[in-house]
Image 1 (cartoon, rainbow, N blue to C red):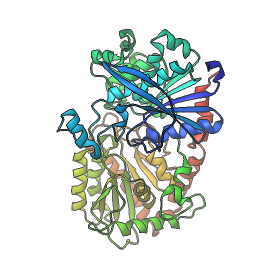
Image 2: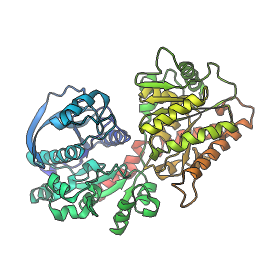
Image 3: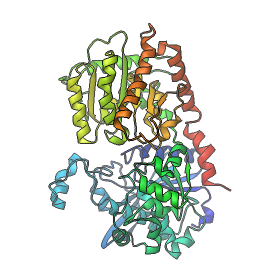
Image 4: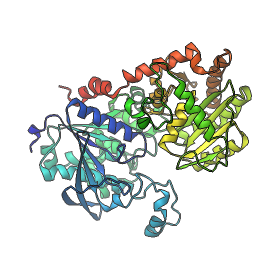
Amino acid sequence: MSTKENNGLIWVVSREYAGFAEAGGVKNVVKSLAEAAAAYGLTVTVFLPRYGNNSEDLDNCIGEAQIRVGDTPHLVRYFELFRKNIRFIFIDSGIFTEKKDIYTYCAEELDYFREKLHRPDLKKGDGYIDNHEMNVLFQKAVYCYGLRNHTAPQVLHCHDAHTALLPAFISARCTGRRLFRHTRTLITIHNAGDGYRQTFYSFEYAAHLTDLPHRVLEYGRVDYTVEPFLVGSAFADLTTVSPWYAKQLISPEHSPYSYLFSKTLAQKHIHITGITNGIDFATYNPLDMECSGLPFAFDIQKEQFEGKYACRSFLLDKLQSQTCTAPLYDGIQQYGSMSTQEEKRTLYLMYHGRLVRQKGVDVLLKAIPRILERFPNLRFIVMGQGNPELEAEAIALAAALPGKFVYCKGYNRKAARLITAAADFIVLPSLFEPCGLEDLIAQVYGTIPIANAQGGLQKIINGKTGFLYTLPNGEEQNTDIHISALTEAVLNQAESFFATDKARLTDIPYFKNIILQACTALHTEFSWKHIFTQQYLKLYFPN
């Protein structure tokens, strides 16, 4: 099939996709964007690795290939699956299928890899030591698929640094340049923080592993390293997940967590288009208990909040004892407890996400005792896992604040949504945030965000759809100042609540209007249909 016959054909390339390969927020964006394109009537093909935790019954093998990465040959097989008017092609090879997770070692595979790699020091959460090999094989396999089938898309959309070299693989050879000559190529940066860019820490290693010409890799050289995003930028347009993050990335003075990378972007005058991510409301809809996973339904748009508070009572009942026989949900380990009787005038605040410093979790944990000194009727629930030091700090805080702070270690989708729906506020003190999804999810459930005005969190309109606080210029990395700013932001809202005689936040017109305005925005400007038709469609087909 020639490219002329492929008008409207979109290839989406990602290592994550909700329902198949789940790690971070990338999975939700890729799925929603692909479904929005398919709903518009475009022909969408999604390329994914086939990981060992993929439970799909894949029996339709449509081809195979031998692909070399460095000195190692890999047998790759291509499996086809159709779902929701989208064609999926899974890249099957041993380097993927032996993995039970996406990027890091999980508990179930530690013994196997400790023995195989002779690495008794491997621990849960460590990144796969062959991540670069996985990335290169995946990208070469997608390119090889096009060559073997003599087909190329009209639009090739690569997601994150794991796929950022694919445009270079295509353009480095005459055969690829001819085949993909009509293809519009995009690379979306979901996170360019240090540790997320899949940086090759040696030019020689990058050349050996990728077999790309030195002149091509030079586009991405930063000192002795090679940055895939920079290499890809020579052959594709760069996008990112909010206009604020796009601006931040090309301003090194505002990007302390990607400074050298941002400095190079600025020096090379590389343009990045920022498009704010949306949310698939139907996936979380609190009226649909099957989709939401909540024990009670409610309707924010119709101002029917009883189900939200029923969810709170249900959650508090589960959190009443630290030694309860049944855990909150599978995969969750509870530390601390809350009173069995809900106080008449209590505010509930929560955080859900990775326990890492990027998310400002260290700031939050230190701010909580200060906040409780002023308003002891506040209650905090933190859920997530990540940095062992932050996990230990959260466990210690739960012991120090009995009845007022609960830490739920681990992840469970139903638990995350229940905690979000039960709360009055979600606290998001991120040090940097490319877009942010948790604020949108919280707004689905009538939970108001209090967030640091960083990156994509600036889509929150202060005092209209949530609350933002800012740090003084030059003090973004000053933890003490951040703790004070977060504390003040929470205290301001607590004071507004306790200044009334209302028992619930939704009984106060000011807060209820914020909840309703946020809900309206979710169905309009933050719907994926709106974002796709108004922004991505123009980006895909500019002429």
